[in-house]
Length: 401
Image (cartoon, rainbow, N blue to C red; front, side, top):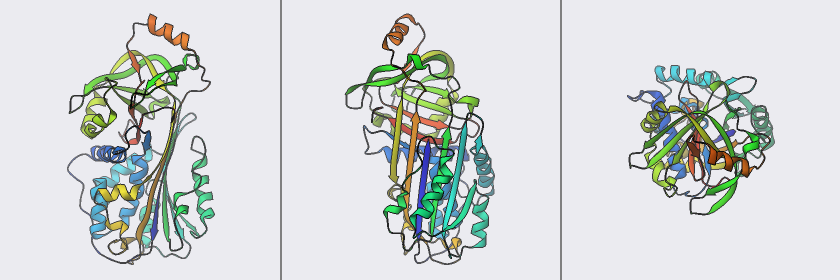
């Protein structure tokens, strides 16, 4: 899985100030709320489509941007995140999170980084440089932003060792004019691992999947019979859902699946009721159960314009050349955010897949164990268990798209 956020800053005009303290609730709850708010905003108006987005990959560069923000610009960023990096308790908690999210072993790799590409000759505030240099494995790299290949090559180097599949390819800011660019923030969240209990390749097969508008397709479906964490719940509107947890090796992360019990219930009816408290309630009330699990293989890749998303949340000043107050970056009123683009990719599969319809059909007829069958649209989110941080979140409406 490769997750990429890019923020492009250009010279601008002026403003003044500082942010407020941490809101009353726990920061983990605020970060989860941010994750699902981001997902709901992206999902709105995209009924019937696949999507994936990384809240962790989005929040990190916004935090770094906050180090340079003042006045109303700072307040808007803090309002979007739900917290301010100037709060000591927030810093302590986030450092603990980022140390966990920068971890790897023989079979699992997870890394969250942010590279700040700086136009050669651009003067930055020493305080800003010091703050970001120790923030979540972040780094500063002087480059010539007028020469796109200078950043594309480095970004590819930064992500190629961790990502599954190809690298980020052509960087989004290459699609716009960078003649006045001074800084570019590139956030990457990479994760790759094997299941704690692998799906059996000989049991994989083509099975029917009912898409959002009733279209039935034959899709590659993975299968395993295993002890899993599972629960059945109702959302605030009374819709019934089944929630399943699939752990990765070493329990470094878990994939949670939220599947409507009724195939005729659109995800658009459930998504507005996904809140941090609801997710916390569901995930803490799962119970061990031996189940037949059927999950389609899928691969999703998206690109989103975060500028429009954040603007809809009231974060408008950072994008306004006349109102942006990012004086903390260089000590001068000289920056505004020109572009904020997020790219995300996620792939769920098992090695050596083979279709074997007869085996699974016989298994279903002979088995008395409960069945979790993701044969219609479902929501998924990848979460780190120790901190509760949502690494990525998305939905599968058509596994073949």
